[in-house]
Image 1: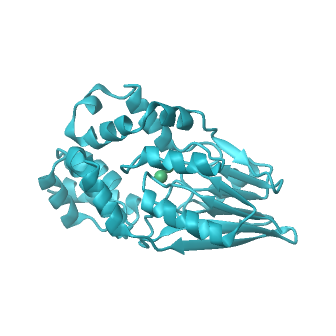
Image 2: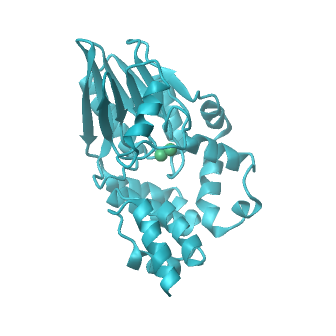
Length: 291
Ligand SMILES: [Fe+2]
Ligand SMILES: [Fe+2]
């Protein structure tokens, strides 16, 4: 019975990854795959690349690999190269040394497993690494994704929320996030998939790690100071396991506010991180139309 561990969305959080590596070594699966977003949204991109490369765990590319590479190549809107809002991204792009950037630039978008013929790993969905599959995705759309692959098991990530859905003889598993979960559980999360009697057994795992160490690394590395409000918001995401940065960025557009601390306080007055993002943006739009 082949057992395959899949980890994803590490987001430059080395204490979380190290705890998961220890847990995987105890579990001793036959194969380990990495589902992308190794870097971005955190201060230790180079360290993560070193760990994954030294372990030799095959990886695919997430949207954050390209996000950071685009910053490194100045292939972003002009104001992202100067605005405070993007200081943390410029910091993360500088932090990634040349050889580490080359490593992530060589990652493929998708891969299969060596120990079983019927597993397909993608970062978001089979058609885009920016399209997450979550409990808000319609059954029709999940069936389309499953019909687009030849394998019985579709493994994905990107939403930072674990999910298991079965349709006929196929399964979709979202493995959740190692370094930045958004499901309210701040532990590092991943999945072990066991092929048994022509079916799959799915185990979603949660691993405790030292969050204080992450906050220390934020300070010691200079990420917190140089990354400003964005780094503070990312630290809040690590602590709460809830999304704040993207909802806040979209809220500034809806509310017509700049990206700064006063605006973030006003955002917190309205925001409920347990609400779906779609519902929140709808509520925010109504709120500012009425004013
Ligand atoms: Fe991610
Ligand atoms: Fe992603």
